[in-house]
Length: 92
Image (cartoon, rainbow, N blue to C red; front, top):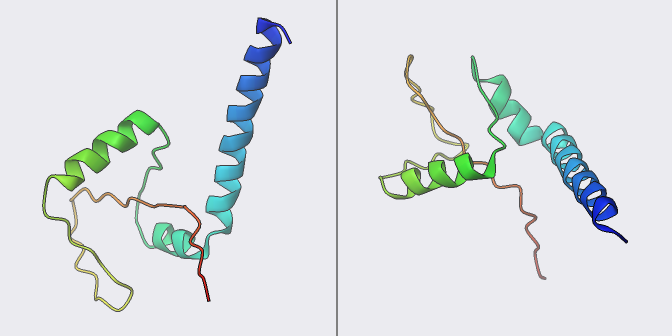
């Protein structure tokens, strides 16, 4: 395999990973409910920006919300939802 073919394969690999991620987001019911309840939102998929947001969020007090909590969302504020799509495996 020459360099040109490697570059094409790499591009196809990243494109395929992005497509799989989008399909997983569409099929994730909890994520879709969360997005539907927001007036406006933007999905950030740039890894560098995501790392920067997580770094900022790690340095301040984070308020974790659970499904049983009553949301206290204020208008005209920015909120970041960091969604980890890693698979959780349970052992019995």
